[in-house]
Amino acid sequence: MIYVVAPDVMDKENFANKIAGMLPRNYDICLFELLPLCMKIEIINNHVILYTDELELYEYFYRYIKLWKDQGHRQKLSLEEAKKLFSKRR
Image (cartoon, rainbow, N blue to C red):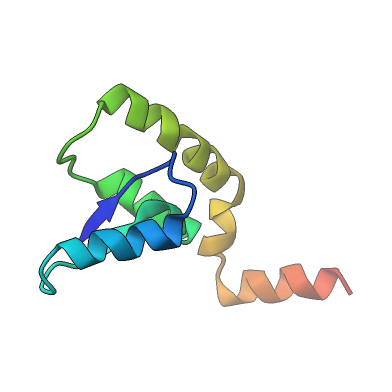
């Protein structure tokens, strides 16, 4: 799987299709910005850089890391914790 990070691209869906069309079908290409936050964090934590300015990339990733710190615990709730959380609101 190859993830392309392109923060300055305006038309992200068109760009993703353009990239996918340039490579053979046996490559699975995704645009980082179009992924859900939980997948972005997996990529940030487990990535291998092919080509970039690393400092600039990590500065860009910082905002996603900060978002995840604010809400990541919600992704790890047990079923019982989730039931308690939602039953309290009613």
